[in-house]
Image 1 (tube, one colour):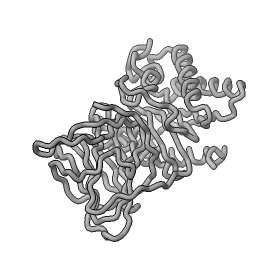
Image 2: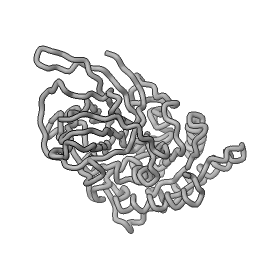
Image 3: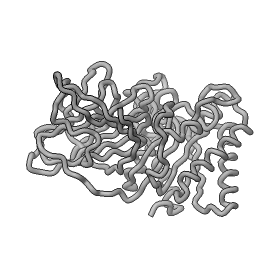
Image 4: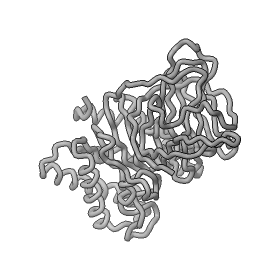
Length: 375
């Protein structure tokens, strides 16, 4: 089995009507490796044998762990169908820049294909964009390809900017469609409603995401004061969550801006060692900067911290930014989201609601405009 790790440049293109589902194999599948399909994110490409009766054809799929992976293409035809591993999770679909609609490759339907659009003008060029809404470490999503009654078209359009988001559940969109009385459910998680996605859309940016709910720089949510064996620092060099098979190529994506929002889980439940956190944060930021030497870096505090935890994380990031500036790095910035006071309601497990994420987007954009971070 051949394994490849690569990042395709992604174009934000679009999708309309989700109509039907079905199961089975079709030999006309255009697989994930086709140059007319753009995929952006921490993605691994892997060949596999796809069965058609007694015949097995070698094809390529894309698989990943982190949210926000974007799959896009253009085509001439009236219909387009997406193929994925059953129970891969939820995707937000747009066709021709119109109505957004969430689709689900779920355990309940266990389908391997969903029609994204039908009855389009077969003589026009259409665009489709599919964005992964969830965290995929449990679901292990796979994209197998598209089928159309027409023809895919290569799209060489490039985005104006490139953004890299490093974060936790806030960046993932954990519970953004739920309420504070609920516990986690994949249906209420939606990356496309986060500040990260919205800022990328506003600035016409291709983006990648390295974010995991409950994880911190040195300590994960509720873990011992001494820290967690597996954390964002130890995962940083790998493409797939908790899989050391695939090393992430840090040179495959040259970000204009890196947004780092961690510290909330490190300081959770008031059971942390501030010196361990300071040391780990300093080392992790240095590693992020070393692997993105030409990028602007925004060190951010999230909205779920308050009181001592917030003060400790703010002070730590202030000290790191100050020292980096003192050492001659003029591309490091500090930004604090306004702590969540419930004004906009709460999502699942007291996470930011969709309305709060909208306000976070506004705050961050105002900061970026003020400091002319993006041209």
